[in-house]
Image 1 (cartoon, rainbow, N blue to C red):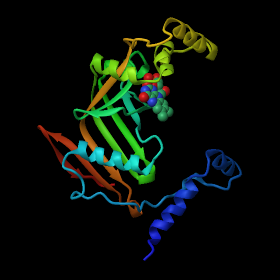
Image 2 (image 1 turned 45 degrees about the vertical axis):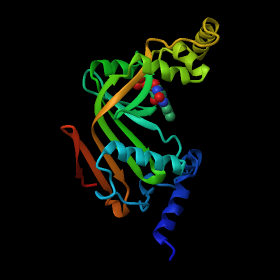
Image 3 (image 1 turned 30 degrees about the vertical axis):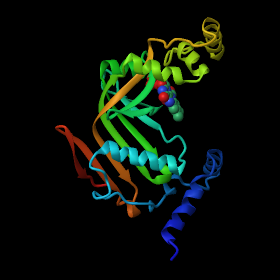
Image 4 (image 1 turned 90 degrees about the horizontal axis):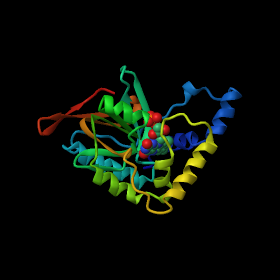
Length: 241
Ligand SMILES: Cc1cc2nc3c(=O)[nH]c(=O)nc-3n(C[C@H](O)[C@H](O)[C@H](O)COP(=O)(O)O)c2cc1C
């Protein structure tokens, strides 16, 4: 029997793939009311029986699904930090690994996020795999990875990215594009090959205290399975959507 609800969803998905500029012109010509953009979530469910007792294993399972589904930028995640005065601050970074139960990303330690993490080493990560109608939310404490781990990852980066880690004073004001490009040329002159890792560039690990898995369901009655640390293990609860 054909799965009608799935077909409806596919139809809606196709229609939300309209390039942004076309939405823009549709909005400008008042053809589209943003409040009326709706999607029914019909793909799958997440039950207590399906979810692994260990949220790291559950994350790995979902991450693999995201890879198999070919979702764009499956490792892109929102990293939320807190300023010294308690204001929220967020941006996207790339997840580069899940190691010893911690979520690892790399950045400039002197950047805005680096300074915020120095002052308040806590973060929230959010990953969205929209084609799978899934969100994962991770709360945790943050620490730097070892210098050896940062060296090892830095060495795997393309040469241009290794150069720009030196050339770009991330989050600082720069006069113009050409001053950045000049700085890049200088770095290339200083280190034509094999630049060493700048001490101000490296990894952080977010050690989770809570992880929530969200699966879209019909009628906005979504599944939310939330794990919280409980001694050496994890306890699990279902949250209302
Ligand atoms: C898809 C995507 C991936 C990104 N990945 C990283 C990353 O892994 N590390 C990083 O430092 N910045 C990354 N950025 C840039 C950050 O979003 C941000 O602009 C930069 O880190 C400066 O943030 P800050 O001023 O809050 O420190 C990425 C941006 C996008 C859109």
